[in-house]
Image (cartoon, rainbow, N blue to C red; front, side, top):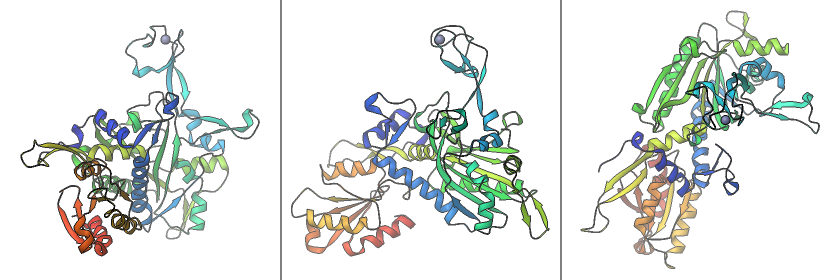
Length: 447
Ligand SMILES: [Zn+2]
């Protein structure tokens, strides 16, 4: 059995699979699409939910020292003044003096417009936040922004969480939610989009303990990707140089993934010092210090942030799972065949188990439906009786369903079915009554 490693796959193949099987659609496609915005189809929606669920479970629910939060997308405009986003969350852009198109200066090879060859203006700062208006009157008094990151919702609730959840340092607040950035050069499908979803953890620590906790979270986050199916050789850690550090950051690491177009950022892990809490204390006039029982001191905690895009992570999981392998012919003496298989972590797979009656036959259907009803109580179970059984196995392999259950004519007599494993293609015959526990066991421990 030969395999191709995930990083050898092309984006064309991934996007073709995504479109064909309903992971991703271009947004507003019937109107010609909206640049760099995407909709998740039936399978994509399941994958995305599972990625978020996996993050939430390991980062929030399974830890004693992290709690969750779900803050609003719209926030008081002063939040962005305090955070520095109003003043410095911008890109220097040049504008073409004839066609008016804007470009990032560092993307250009010459001082001429790549679109029409016209002359270019001097660079001007262009803020990346989306601005909108709250209320009926479009005046400056009601200008608000779509949040460019979820982190600020956590900082402004720091004191609320400390008091209501009675937290002691070190502890973190995790949040998953949409964020918006008016990127000038979006692209590579869902890698960089203007509307995206983040999974962020802000972990508050005692000043002085920050360097140690940064190392801890870098390690934790690398391990999270590996334990959810990303090959370690497709991940690397890059430390930001002094010249590229954001205004708030003391130390920043990127976890980079080997995408088909090259290494690119998957997750950022930053030591943000006490910058954010200090800024919000200053601008709001509220006390955002923490009282340390042990030292009897008040201080602004330091913050270690881990920040990953859901969309970007989902893309990396898809790419890393994609394999094409030569398999034995399905008929004796036939030509060898290729199967496309998403060897995705079982917890992330959009469909967990597919129920496949051997054929669309009146005698098989009631029992197959019964098996489906039994399994869907606990798993995302799909029912498929169209086309040959071989083609249906291939279809499930291609969307990464870890297990298929086949109901055949023997089932009608012995009440047993065949369970098939996606990765090894091994099969097991077992009674219907034992199916839920066996699938559960294999999900946890593998085949
Ligand atoms: Zn131009």
